[in-house]
Length: 269
Image: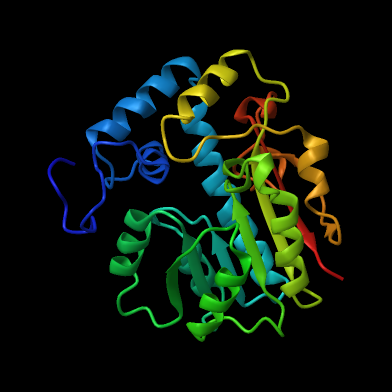
């Protein structure tokens, strides 16, 4: 994509790479610019599995949404949703249960504006521009849309977002604040990048991520597991992404650690 697309708001610097647009590129989307593709290609040159990791994360999210609908969940708060691509949360949830509602949350104005464009006419899904660290605003804006009732069970989706929150900004405190707002029977979904089982090149790719406004923080399994305090992990627990309830037609590779990310879903009892 070249030039200033009509989905890019005024004031957005398209000469600086955007994490959301880099992610869109790896997913095969069309909402990215040359600067995003250049950074993505640099990262991919050092970590050839990065594209597969991002695609695996999206496939995990779809599997998990289907699972959550089967558990009776009808409300989804997708924080750090990025630029929605085909088969995003509202499409999966509404296909499985027509009474589902979805609120997308992202800090990137480009991601939010494009989300608004594709959600035009979809009355059971909406989007807000907010930072995951500003939990009060996320909750208030989500309720204002009239699509989420926090007195009822809700699935809070943090797919690939907490590794963008530095330790100094207390990601555990952010998750705890979200937990307090969730009714019993709610679910928390997390996928998170890790250096566990990864070669040294991953650290260099992490350094490159600092060129965007959202540097990636790789965390070990025990740190990620601690985010589920107050939740009961559903089977198979916190595992590498491909190991989380794989579809029968998608056998797990003998080296699932190569995706470089953990995934889990927990229930608030």
